[in-house]
Amino acid sequence: MAAGAELGNGPGMTGVEAIGTGRVWRPYTQMATAPPPLRIARGEGASLYDEAGRRYIDAISSWWVTLHGHAQPRIAAAIARQARELEQVIFAACTHRPAEALAERLVALLPAGLTRVFYSDDGSTAVEVALKMALQYWANRGRPERQRLIALEHAYHGDTTAAMAVSAPSYFTAPFSPWLFPVARAHTAYCHRCPVGRRRESCHIECLGRLQELLAAHAAETAAVIVEPLLQGAGGMIVQPAEFLAGVRRLCDEFGVLLIADEVLTGFGRTGTMFACEQAGIAPDIICLSKGLTGGFLPMAATACREEIFAAFLSEDRRRTFFHGHSFTANPLGCAAALASLEVFEQEAVWERIAAIAAAHRRHLQALRSHPRVADVRQAGTVAAIELRDRDGAPDYLAEIGPRLTRFYLERGVLLRPLGNVVYVLPPYAIEPRDLEFVWQTIQDSLEAAA
Ligand code: PLP
Image 1 (cartoon, protein in one colour):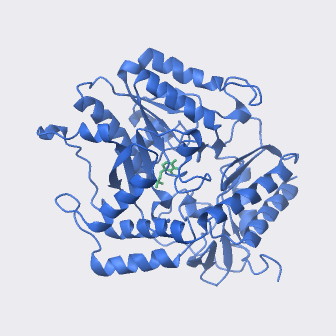
Image 2 (cartoon, rainbow, N blue to C red):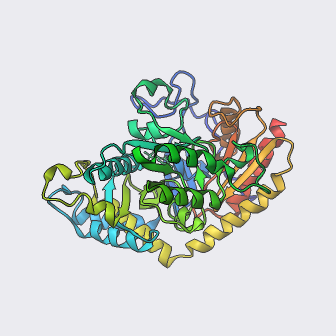
Image 3 (tube, protein in one colour):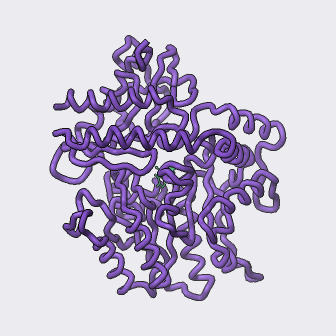
């Protein structure tokens, strides 16, 4: 049977009734006109199976969370074991072995100097924690005027309020703009649409100039710079040269401002190294982790910081306390899943899988680079993106072509959700090589169909 021959035909194309979702309000769904959702019953590796048994290749790791694969047996078993021991306990006044063991493991893996781990629930809360930690760090050190934050163009850091404020203004944030605190915006290294009109082949990362200007003018009132290192996700899968990130670190050092790295997407091997920061040879002051942290099994996040930041909260003065704690902070099931996911890294050929995915991406992107429909191709390890020549402007999340392509892919049994005119592939590491080939063939076909 040819690769993908048993794949599903997509919703609405199979005779499956357009079953509503009852009382569930799904995110990112335009309620009136959205096609019916896939009704997924089961997952295994990179495959998802709907209630009728049709298979779909999950080429986007289910919103970038599924790390090794769906229903990964080692992680599933660890959660089951932990659930029989201790499912949840208040994390103020109590602690537990899985939380402590995970913090030890993370500190050993993280870029040097990140020594303390604060748990929360998801990527957005990891970012909220990082921002609050940075602001209160300065206040606790007697510098309460350091309240400004600097973030990048095209940034996406989550959907909670402070995370929206540091994200670039977009359709996602527009209805709430009066509520969002002002944030200074530095250029990102979006080489295909260079913000300062250079060409990558001959540039010296002049796009850093804007950050330098902002810091030169406002460092004394600035708490932190926040970036998605190496790869900006929801803003259009924009891949930055490592030199850009190294330059951001250099400027933060020069001006004495904290650097927050949001590795919610990039963490745990996605860009080819355990953390994206490694590729620039830098360590941030604060790092945000979630999504793949638990192997993608459970909602959980960690914000890790340098010892000096932690120390600023240690005091007999109780007002210096970091008063931030979610009900499920350090949930033992999440910790057990995360520990098991790290074990998978140790005991299975995960880095070989990552290298194989990256090599396949490279080959296919090279082949597509000169396609008349393709404006730019980008890659960071296991993440590949193609910016289509849909229009002259920057990537547009609401570009007409996005939903049309999504439908095309689902009809062929491939779950891909272009960000407007940016098609990207970000598979679980367990994806079978033949399935990855099928995903790329399907993308190639979609370009021909669109042409
Ligand atoms: N930060 C980054 C870089 C992300 O890509 C995301 C989600 O896509 C978030 C934060 C928010 O994570 P969550 O959706 O788990 O709140």
